[in-house]
Image (cartoon, rainbow, N blue to C red; front, side):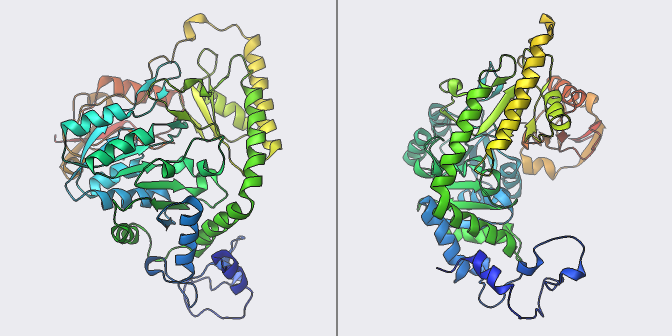
Length: 479
């Protein structure tokens, strides 16, 4: 079978001269740096067209559908962002109503804005001991659908950035009763299908559309993702149309080849790769769970706060009750131990593991955390500081005064953040990563929100979204 990445490799060795884009003309001497210019082509003869595929790209996507067991697999070279924009746009008519988890990625909010949708928020429960978002429960979904029968689709994030999995199967049964599609942002769960050690993928639990970022947890290049159509409740032609709108008309063959190579590798060698990965991960978690002060997030949280399952490939290190903040732990791991973690929060740090990890890499992390934990044992912690982060979840329930589209299109003014309390925000505010809005255009700004932002900044966390990068001012509706 011809594979895209192999054909690109072969083509790069031929003497065909490019009187076509890209401008580097596969001439490495025309640029500085070591990049794969020899395989960076455009839609030339024999290499198909992503937005009108009939040949090698069509077969590459069919291979993805077969590997995952979906009806159709759509390549996204604009990450899960383009896939989520397309999924929401395909499922909800312009101006329609969508039920969405409040902890959805900002791409879902952007779809709401672009399509002038009316969002109905369902807030995840909070796991109070660890202060992280829990799951979305079927019961709460059912109540909202009963109250607002004009909802056209639902979108949830499962797993979350922290590895929290909701009861997708239970939610899917309810959406089927109401005849509306369920979109699952499974960006962080592309690896679920390849080992029973991980939660069951939404692909197998009744979701109608599943979006996965391959680059997050599988051996594929940054910006590669897929959208799976899993039922006939959503039109493949409509998805195809929106994927063509939200992606470049000149998609990168290097990125598409990376997706194809990833699928081929998993098909041929995935079982061995995941066996090795799971063995190394289990050994690492066994060591890390023994630490006394730096607590590792474990499956013990399952059953609390709507948490149906937990992705054990996520390593969450909690600092509550220690002398460290999440920012400080992140800093120590990076500067002293040369370990770059995925995310820092007020009171925990997240590390992402995958089949690309080596046993040696995981041992380095274990050694570092054990050493930091040993140091904490030698310190006398002020008891008054132990609970400093209690009830500090950034995802408070906010009051929506105006719609997102209406707000962004309104006349706005800037004011000092401290003087914005009670006003209507005209901007998004995120802690990045993970890019989940803690404030959405149209929501009323509260004193607690302002205090939280100032606290995040004092701790060195990355607050983004405001047009004022110093976060001193915020755009609000009206004068």
